[in-house]
Image (cartoon, rainbow, N blue to C red):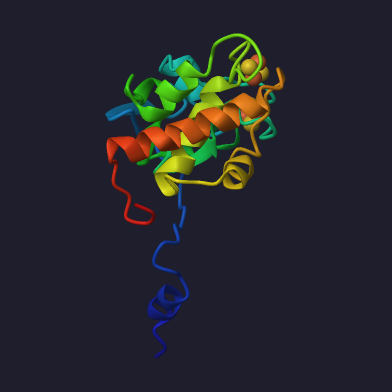
Length: 193
Ligand code: FES
Ligand code: FES
């Protein structure tokens, strides 16, 4: 008699998830702390990660601007990768690690570089600052992966983020300064340093 269960199992990749029923609750680790949420009480199946982070947990550093994945203002880092939190459902973050700008150290090289590049005038990395958290988190993820990017790689890596004040030159310079700080601090990265 054919073993249907075994045959079916062979067709499922190891990392595939077979969803049988919605979870009753979810857990998300944000900036190092786990948070538990009850479905239909704290959130619904359509609640976005950006809403959960801002409205339920108070991490208002991330901004929701376009709310459709087009501007990068809502960028957070999920399991080490920059993601658009307005485009992720909160339930998709169940069991995952999220880093928001509030979770960065004050002496984080990216934070320092953007702060130092904030003097008003030509070359500033920020004017109104609305886009800044998204750029900082995208830069953070970029430099975690590639600590010594070229200007072209910075432009490419930050290409999904929009600054309506047009501070792109200053933002790119801040990213390169952050890279210099990382190298100076001797932060190790297996790939490039
Ligand atoms: S608010 Fe998420 S990409 Fe614009
Ligand atoms: S500094 Fe105003 S949107 Fe970028």
